[in-house]
Image (cartoon, rainbow, N blue to C red):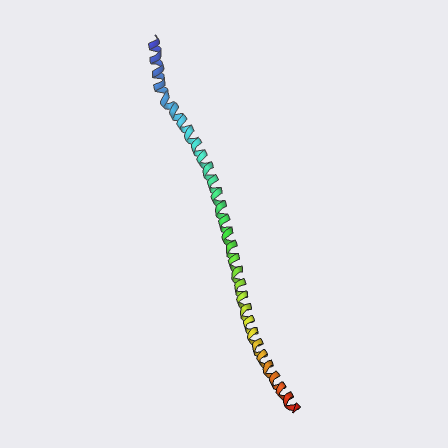
Amino acid sequence: SARATLLALESFVSIAAPSFYALVGEQAAKLANKKLERYAEEVTKVVEGEVDQKLSLQRHAAKLEAARAAVEGSEAELARKLAATNAKLEKYMDYAKKARGVVDRHVAHAKQ
């Protein structure tokens, strides 16, 4: 009788198990798909955030590079202007020295 019960239980399990596992498998597949969808959404959000941040940093870097180039251009222009001004100043100083020499000679000549 115990043996008959065991055989009956085994036959029930062997008949019911495939459909039970199919049902459980289907539910597990649905849960797995839902989790995978949520995971994919989260990954997409993270990736989009990273991409947005990278693009923002690239735009900021481009602005900084443009500003640096403008400053360097301005500094180069100021350096050229300073060099030109210094050259003019040197010419004026030479002219002033020569003019002073001429005035000194005239004064010396006038004293004689």
